[in-house]
Amino acid sequence: MIEYRKRSFGTVSKAKDEDGNEIYEIKELSFKEEKDAKNEGIPSTAIREVYLLKELNHVNIEKLIDILHSPKLFTLVFEFIETDLRKIIEGRKKKRKITTI
Image (cartoon, rainbow, N blue to C red; front, side, top):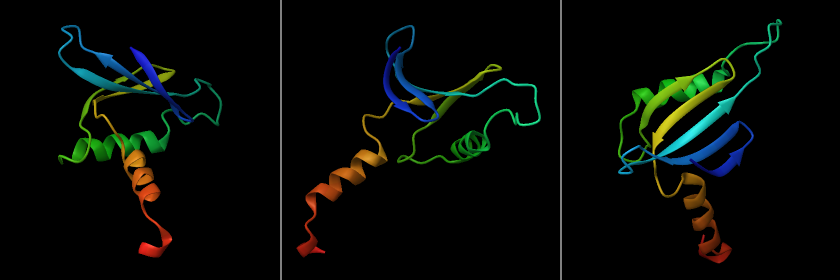
């Protein structure tokens, strides 16, 4: 597994299956395992993301392959896509000039 992005929620890595035929994106969300009143378990944003991704089936939305979890780690396995929406939007911003809008 190769880590290629670090975000505030955790890390995103790239991994190959055992046969080496498929490449996947592994999104690891870490959270604290505390037994106090502040502990809410898996963050609600992660639950919303999983729910939406399981419901959506579109060529322009990455496919959620699997979900793995442990007391301290929540892992989402996606199909691997070369780029992301942020890169596309940033690329378009650079090409536009204020006079063309």
